[in-house]
Image (cartoon, rainbow, N blue to C red; front, top):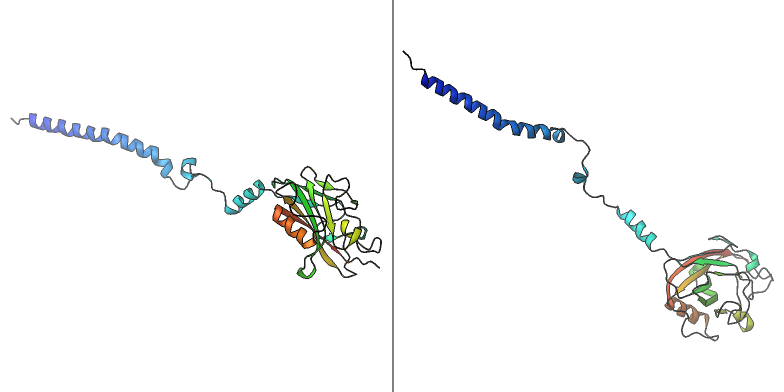
Length: 233
C-alpha cells in the first residue's frame, strides 16, 4: 500500500507556497494599479511637478520700470514733438525775447524732489543753446501758468528764480523760440532737484553756469519736445 502522507505534505506545501506568493503579490499589484494613471502618459502635470512659475526678463524689466516711475512733463499749449504756437515765440510781438511763457504741468514720479527746475534749449544740429531757465521751484508746485512775469525772482512763484539769454530786462523773462524762419527743435527739460535751492547761482550767473549747476543738483529729468520756425519779422 502506497504511503500518501508524503504526497499530502508536498501538496500542502505547494498550496501554501502558492497562497504566499498570491498574498505577497497583492500589494505590489495594488501599487501598480494606483500608479497606473500617473504612468498612463502625458497628462497635465500636478502643481508639485510643474514647479513655481518664473517671470520672463521682459516682464521683470516692465515691473521694475513700473515700480520706479520717473517724472513727467506736458503742456496744454502743444503736444510732445508738436509745433510750439507762435504765441510763445518772437513771432507774437515781432521782437526777440520777453516772450509769453507756455503753461507747463508735471508729476514728480518717484524722484523725491526737493524742488524743480526747467530749462528751454534750442537743440538744432545737435546744439545746446539755452534760451531760458527757471529753478528753485518749490516741491509742492507741479505747474507753471502761462505768461510768467519778469524779474530774476519770478513774481508769484514762491521764490523761484529765472534767467534768459540776452541782456537787461530781456535776460529776466521768458525767451521763446526765434530761429528766424527755419524750423528748429526745442526742448523743455524738467529737473527734479536734490535740494530746495540750487547752490552757487546769482543774477549775474551765465546761462552755461546755470545749466551746469542745475544738472549737478538734479536726481532725475524728463524732456518735452517741440519745434518752431518763428521769426521776429
